[in-house]
Image 1 (cartoon, rainbow, N blue to C red):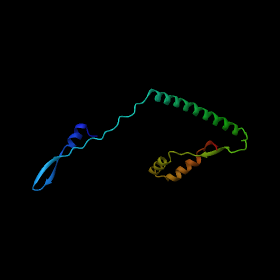
Image 2 (cartoon, helix red, strand yellow; image 1 turned 90 degrees about the vertical axis):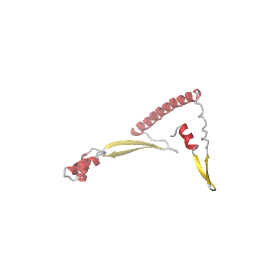
Image 3 (cartoon, helix red, strand yellow; image 1 turned 60 degrees about the horizontal axis):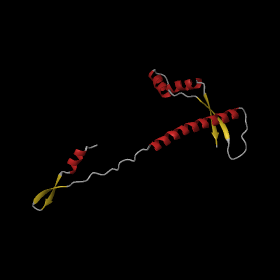
Image 4 (cartoon, rainbow, N blue to C red; image 1 turned 60 degrees about the vertical axis):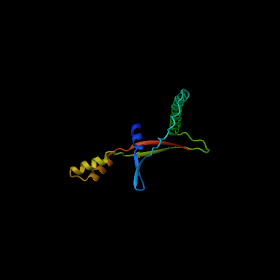
Amino acid sequence: MASASNLHSQSARPQVVPQGPYEIPQVIVTRPEVVPAPEVISQTELAMFISLRGRLDQLENQVRQAEQSIRERIEQGALVEEGDHSATLEEHFRRNVSWKEVAIRLAERLKMDGAMYCARVLAATKPTRSISITIS
């Protein structure tokens, strides 16, 4: 970003404008753009923000507790009342080999078939169970 003195010297450079057989230097001055001062942040606004952040924490805790309660009851076999909304648990099993690319490169460096090596590791890995709750 240019400093104020730099802007002044750049905007006040003489420009040569042809005027018949003579050239007359003219100075073209441009005014800097006026930027309004930002609005003051009041203590009331800051207090409101702190209050809202505290309320958000409370709401997030209430949502976690409600979800946990519904999840536990569904796992215990509770039925969901008929109506517009539903609640189901979805169970997923995943074998997660996050280091697969590194293992393939290492295996290939050791003159092994990297894809085959990772397939054997994946087959020997116990799947991770995850359950997600869907409420609509």
